[in-house]
Length: 292
Image (tube, rainbow, N blue to C red; front, top):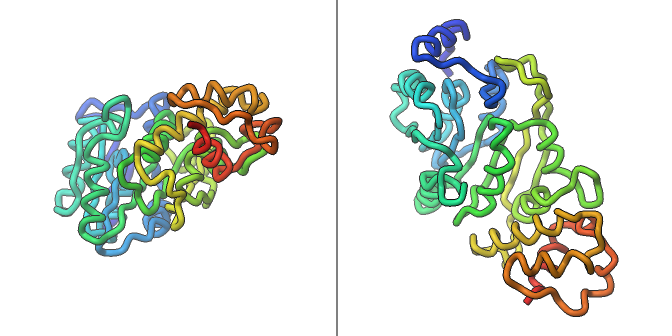
């Protein structure tokens, strides 16, 4: 991998285009080259695979990903950063840049270029991987959008806020377990790989970050094969967890109504007095499927 200029040089480039990084907007640049290499290695792309990177920023991680994959599709919202990263990676013709919001699809769904890249990867016989240093504010909504994609990526390696990573990996019955945990775990095996201190970012965030890996389940529930079903399941689970401490017999009718269905009558006795937060993804799938 080629060495890069000192960060001061990039600060000058950003100043030249009128860009100043903002912690409030989650524009925290990861500076540690060894961590960029580690993230690229953790994604473990094969030469035939496609990587979708959300928010390439200045292209530090992109530069590590590019030699490892057949195609990299990098989605960047800020046109000023995009101008810098295009110039930085002009020698990598298989890196394609998309100017736009990763959540720019209808109803804040994934931008159309993301599912298109995944589908094209699968059509060529390769895997699709999602790799990103995600701004804290969009990480949760983006993961929800990923769960509803027409075709799911085989793996995602994401640098996110530590709190979110712990939520994603949390087990049923724990305080961190929630609707997003259950929705993501229904589709992916989740592992928290490592913690990342604020000191390796500029500007420095006020909280720790963590790297989380999602591997698509090899034996997914057949009920969740279609994207429309996954969207419906997510709505159902989200509604259940809005009153997570109430017994299912109280909250199940409203959750079923939210997806235009009726709750089973009676609620199975084994579940009646339980709360949503006590149910694992497989049990929640069965409960959703029992609504008519």
